Amino acid sequence: MSARLNAQMAFLNEADKLKSVIRATTLCDGSRHENSGEHSWHIALYALILGEHAPVGVDINRVIKMLLLHDLVEIDAGDAPIFGDHDIALMEADEAKAADRIYGLLPTDQSRDLRALWEEFEAAATPDAIFAKSLDRFQPPNQNLMSNGGSWSDYKVSFGTIEARVGSKIARGAPTLWDWLKPKIEDWFARR
Image 1: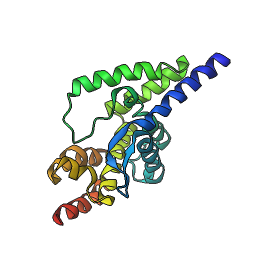
Image 2: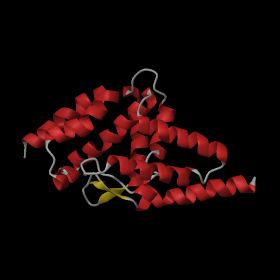
Image 3: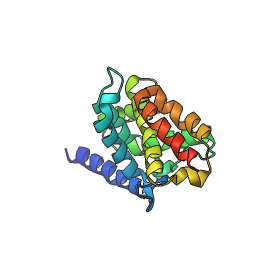
Image 4: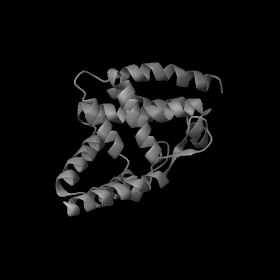
């Protein structure tokens, strides 16, 4: 039992490093950039509160688990801002290597199960993962609206860029949320 608990604690202690990964999105009050630990917690809370807007059959408990786990690879691979310019193949390879190391800290059964959830999220091919991805894209624009543009201003993005990179992913898994958010973003840009 102590070997299992030692492995679980090694993983949990490693996960604490996610709090040191700084993201491009600011807090709602614009006072500072959020870290990836805060982001993961916040979108898990989004899933809990907004789960009623998920398509029929989505398991919100699985979605919450995916959202708590999805960014742990950033401990090694770093954050790749949605409006940044990245080598996607290199980023995916770095994240897979990070997943091997980080999830590999756990006992075999937990390592296998949690890594599978992470892979499901990344593939975005199941209803649960599609909704989870939608929430991952839904939270940052809401924070940008609250912080007078946040990363939109930093990256000098247009509404068209937001709609293509963010809106399409939100609409895929949570069309009600995109229908609610889209006019708010359009209004923000119209006032600029």
